[in-house]
Image (cartoon, rainbow, N blue to C red; front, top):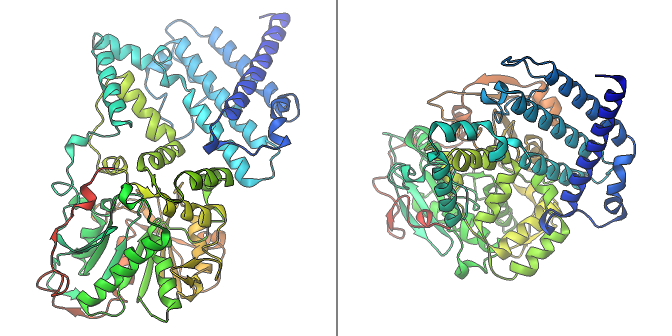
Length: 579
């Protein structure tokens, strides 16, 4: 290639970079209000930024990288398989199939995409935006755009689609169309073979009975499986935005079954998926009809004045709200508190918090804040968008382009089984946590007529977080240690929000970190001094819980008591209802 040709190529790549940047900004400014940016001069002048430093520098670097990539392709011999110049990030499997490297066209396509994707991410990072949440929204939108534009997502630019279609003589295309039509009818992308699971048959099968119900919850008491049980029971409060059986999947990975097998008497709240008749319920209703009522029933059934309690995800702030209300009323409601991947301080909420703006909350307030339903499928779509390659695009490719049926996977079956929330409860929660972070502020919120102060929760607390959690950043979960008023133990599990929490002790996979230092440490100092332990964190927690559960006694002969008789066998009706 001559000097003139190289200069012309460089100029064309530079212009392509400008066009790519412009297309990116056009994408951002076209977003619906739920992902929109503040309407201020900064955003209005964004289309002029590509001509400024450091954006011009980034474009020159992009042009140079494209030039080197193009030259490497020109030098490639027919039939030659070469090491790619540009490689995906660790864990990115979109281009791992050999078909992507067998021909220069597809090899160039994937590497050019990766260059452009990296460039746009750097552009978002370089934006002169001082507002942290606004910048995080920009980075999130950038990733949405980048993920959606991958050549693997389109039939014409995916060699795996072409190969599969040829090998199946077009049957994969027919199957893909059928899968797409079926998913359109369901209103969501299929992530697993849903016919492989049935609640109560091979999932959520730990024996027990529903011993109480109201219009919002069913309370399950699980059947003991040991000769002796601890005298003090434990109440589990799962998130109300999902079905409870994440904690009771198949027998080999059931958190509930494991606790029962360790000799604990276990009660669990099964939240009802809100219909229009529940659309008026507020946060106060969830606190009163959920944890507060459940604790009362547990006390009456067992005779224990101070049960242990655990809150998982949003079940954590719900449970802590209930405990703070009871403390304000002069009660001493529990012996210990466990928080699993839960937030009390929302100052570091991650991408979810960045997507919650005054505009979006006001829009929801106007639409469903006085009554109505926040549909679980809408919440599920937001959560999936946070990990679009894993939870959206791989199924678009597998289900529609390749015509395959997803494999059975209990976690993904649960993930697809969404739960509706009443509008007033949903809008109160996002406004007072993600938007204004009032829950952690003493006396700032009034719940059930009481000014709540989480510092008044002085019982021992076990706080568990997951190191790769993208929904509840572990550093944010760690901040709960500075909010609660009693002694705290912090455990950091490997993996993410779900796999880090539901890590069966029987499989003894992954690891976790502990640090028993009595000093007041920052999260960075804590992890720097933590010791790594092999396997699941479950045994570490049950040992801690056992020390706060009293003596070993004979198990109850039957669930409930004279006032609270068995209504129906577990898992109950509420969890089986589809949103």
